[in-house]
Amino acid sequence: MNIKTLIVSALCIGALTFGASAQDRYGQRPPVVLSPDLTAPWVTQLRQKGTAHGAGTVVRKRRAISRQTVNRRHNTRVASVRSSRAKQTPQMNPVYLPQLVDYATSQKPGTIVIDTPNRFLYLVLGNGKARRYGVGVGKPGFEWAGTHRVTRKAEWPDWRPPAQMIEREKKKGRILPTFMPGGPANPMGARALYLGSTLYRIHGTNQPWTIGAAVSSGCIRMRNEDVVDLYERVGNGTKVIVI
Image (cartoon, rainbow, N blue to C red; front, side):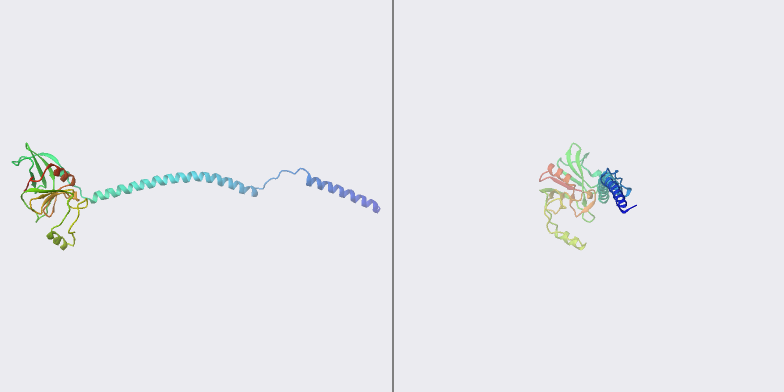
């Protein structure tokens, strides 16, 4: 084979190779198949989106349950506090609530009779009847008896403790004010009926659980509701008998 023949053969082989290469480059390509490693991120994202949606539902449910739990716990605490307060605060015996009773007496209607030993105040109505209220009376050493008349009435009276009371309580370590204006915190309560020229009076109290006990310094104390009721039924000049 001469040199000319070799050159022609080489050119033919090159042409064939170029044609095949061109077909490979510009011909129709086979579909691209993503490997599992490449598709994994997309699958993960899809799962995350689905999970996020589901998680949102779970979160909402958890939040709803959480609110219910909080409300239930709050209600339980409130009930517990109320129960604790009820146990700590003494309750008044219901026998001392106002009621209409039979009452035989020679006193005229409108007279007030205070039965110290039994802790009752009677407002005589006549015809063998009386309106009975529970009261708190003087503690041992401060009991008294006698007959007076109501000389003054006051709504939400102020309180001016006597000097003897201030000194007595000071020895116990309790400092009393020399003056306290009327109001719910005032131990004189909602109403007061002043008896003669004495320091004694029939008055309300901010400690209703003491009704039925001997706890005062000689005054007759009533529940605020009861002293308001009595206040409306009697006037100045009413006879008051303490036995």
